[in-house]
Amino acid sequence: CVRDLLLGIKNLDLDLVVEGDGIAFARTLGDMLQARVKVHERFGTAILMLPDGLKLDVATARTEYYEYPTALPTVEQGSIKKDLYRRDFTINALAVRLNGKGFGDVLDFYGGQRDLNDKVIRVLHGLSFVEDPTRVFRAIRFESRFGFHLGKDTAALIAGAVKMNLFHRLSGHRLLEELKLLFGERESKQAIKRLAELNLLKFIHPKLSWSNRLDKLLAALEEAVDWYRLLYLDRKMDVWVVYMMGLLEVLPERAVKDLLKRFPLSEQEAAKLKMARVGCHNMIRRLASRRPLKPAEVYHLLSGLSDETLLILMAKSKGEIVKRQVSAFLTTYQHVKPILTGTDLKAMGLKPGPQFKKILDRLLAAHLNGDVRTEAEERQFLHQLVQDPKGGV
Figure 1: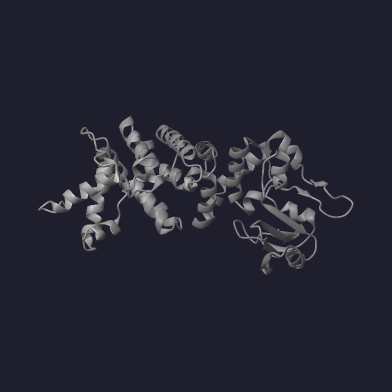
Figure 2: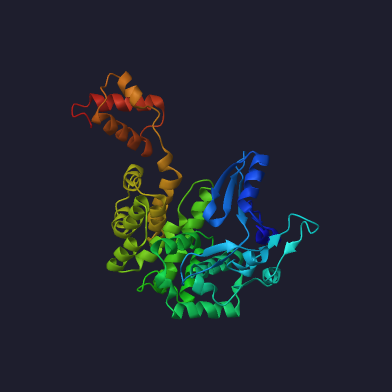
């Protein structure tokens, strides 16, 4: 929060650090603010949920040590100076005093303000990446987000961590969580390229490396994602899945299976990634058919696919035909709904059953293809469909 405040970036992620009993302070503050308090005794932390939905994190000032590289830290109560020393980078080791005569003063023990001005990402000590290798991914994330660069010593420490193969010790869960955050940044392609420059792609999978093919695919994905973000400002999409699809695309089949097995993916996430890998080529071939497809045919092909898969389709297709069809589906076809519903079919004397869906699907296809537009035309279409001796369904 202090970092973003000094950079002029809006951030409501508030963290309070207390020298003393942070949990007792949180409970007292919770009573004053009529907030719900969730306590984590082991770490001396608490979360306050305010009535207006704002979340406030409160922590006891503490120091920590690592029993071995990549281990989770053991924490002990400490001073604010020691607490800030636990941070990953100097730009994140800043605080503002909220009590006493120095109210409002910036506490900067490690040169964080200087590094903000110089646009430098710098660790606080030489064992930072040994203690927690995931900090390397965060360094790249901040480089990408703020347009900063790695300090010379910090870059050398990353190279040392790579030589020590510390990243192989990371669990699939911890690595995946960092990749989700990294691939969710605005400049995801540049972040992935930075992974390659720092010789880190091999820790995602040994067969993963930078290539012209990957470069072009990620550029096309970035263009598709930017287009999607402009189109759907409020629609949720897992951007990290899109870029992970791009990485899987350049890996051999065995490597893809290994990677999907290593990461603790949800069923939905795994299904999206598998679909992009095995189904895209055939889908592109069908969409690029020499025979022009009707809107209803495009809808039928694409309606079961995730938005992430649709974007990888756009990125992988070499011609404009597929891109136009996917764009038409996202912007128009998927929003088309017939006026009449199953209730109207019952009112027409039809009994509910499997034929309902078939009839309504035919009605939707007629709408998509422009054969019907009004309710009257829908009723006439349904009447003809029902009167068809073959049932039309």
